[in-house]
Image (cartoon, rainbow, N blue to C red; front, side, top):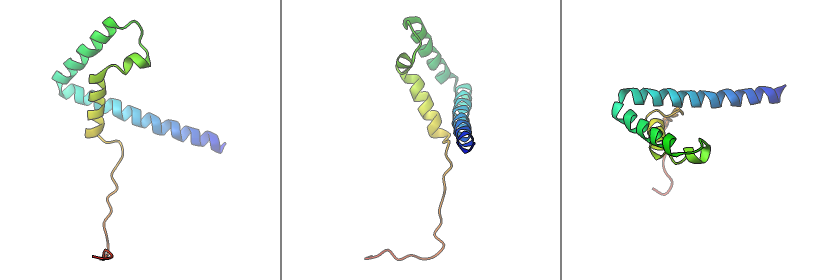
Amino acid sequence: MEATAQAFVFFLAGFQNTSSTVSFSLYELAVNPDIQENLYNEIDEFLQSSETFNFDNLMKLKYLDMVLNETLRKHALLSILNRICVKDYQIPNS
C-alpha cells in the first residue's frame, strides 16, 4: 500500500510541473503574438516536411525548445528558499 501511495505522489508531482509549464507557456504565447507566430510557423513547416511525428523529430523543433526554456526561466517551478543568518559569524582565517 505504501508503494502505491508513493507512486501516486510522484505521479501528481510530475503532473503539476507539466501542467504549470504548459499553462505558463500558453500565457506567454498569448501576451507575445510575435513569438506565437514564429512558433506556429516552425510547427507548420515541421508538420508539412516531416513524415512521422515522434520524439526524435520533435527534438528538431529548436524554437519550441527556446520558448519552453524561456518560460521555465521566467516562471520557475521551484520556489526559492531564502536563508537569513540570525547571529554573527566570523569566517575562519579572515
